[in-house]
Length: 134
Image (cartoon, rainbow, N blue to C red; front, side):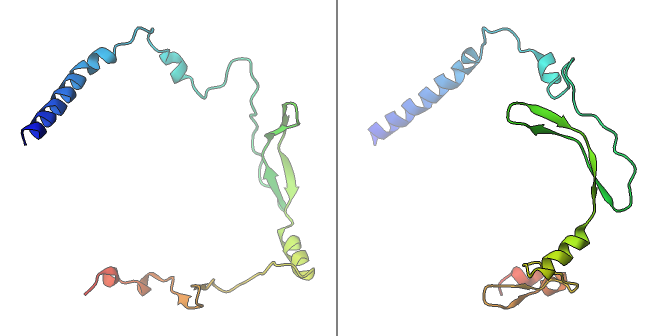
């Protein structure tokens, strides 16, 4: 029993010495950090070109694809925004006509578990006290 008390006392003494020496370990000989650099992180560097474009007004039957940078294999190249024809309905019809896996449903989705049982999604199906055991 006496040995155990000595080990515990030695552990406490070690912790006390370590915590007392922490201010000495945290002293830094390096110069102060560059706070201006930290404050400017994410801001554009002077002399660089960044993509800034105005989104045009909506156009019936088209979707605006904003500009982006594209990797060409050797460098990033700026590709400006463009209008893309909105052909969603035609694509769905084509997928159904060719026998693809596209399914268009107008009814609400029914969730089922692995056994085929319907999983209710209405909040009324799960009363507040339903998780407590009686």
